Amino acid sequence: MVKIEAGMFARSLAGHDQNRLYVIIREEAEYVWLVDGILRPLEKPKKKKKKHIQVIHRVAEPVRQALEEKALLRNEQIKQIIQSESQSWQEDKDVESRCN
Image: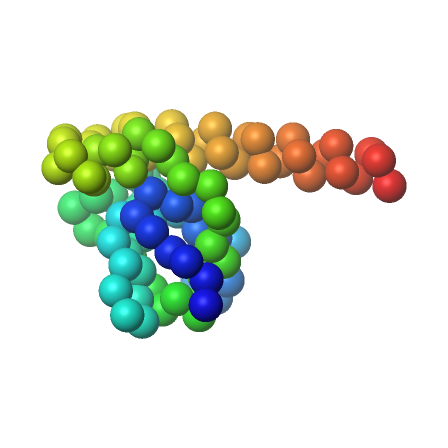
């Protein structure tokens, strides 16, 4: 079983939000709660079954720390973290395609 924890990135595999990048803020037996700071703010996280997401085993440290410390986390922070992760993922993909 894949280890899932709050602060990890996840990509939606199914539904109208397919391929969208999120940050996991809560995890339970069969579900995770996802936010992106835009369409899914912290006040209204997306509840999604674990089988419908692809966990990206990188932790957004500011998010994880804020959740552990019960500190205030803002949607703007989530949005910026996801944008930077998305850019680095795209850069990795570009490098990979040039090497082949």
